[in-house]
Each structure stands twice: as C-alpha cells, then as structure tokens.
Length: 79
Image (tube, rainbow, N blue to C red):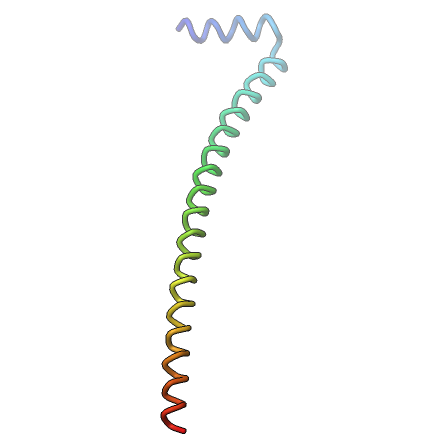
C-alpha cells in the first residue's frame, strides 16, 4: 500500500504528464539495457561462428590442394 501512496504523491507533486514521461523514460532505459545485452551476446556468437568458418575454409582449401596434387599425378600416369 505504501508503494501506491508514493506513486500518488509523486504524481500529485510533479503532475501526471511529467510522471508519465518519467515512467516512459524508465521503461525505455530497461528496454535499452535488454537490447544491448542481447546484441552483445549475438555479436560474441557471431565472432565465434566466423572463426569456426575461417578454420573450416582453411581445412577445405588444404583438402582441395591435396586432391589437385593427386589428380595431377594421375594425369601424368595416364599420359
């Protein structure tokens, strides 16, 4: 009950429009914190996935190179 009385006193002292602006500011601040946290997590995950993809590309490049060498040897044997 005391919380409601505090809000009523706040609204009576500053006025309803200003109290609404304060409440809106608080809600926006909470949303901004949530969005920032989510974006930080997504950025971290994206960096990890990019590194993994980079390593996989290196591995695939090495495999393609070894296949090319084997093909070259086969072509020489056929000639």
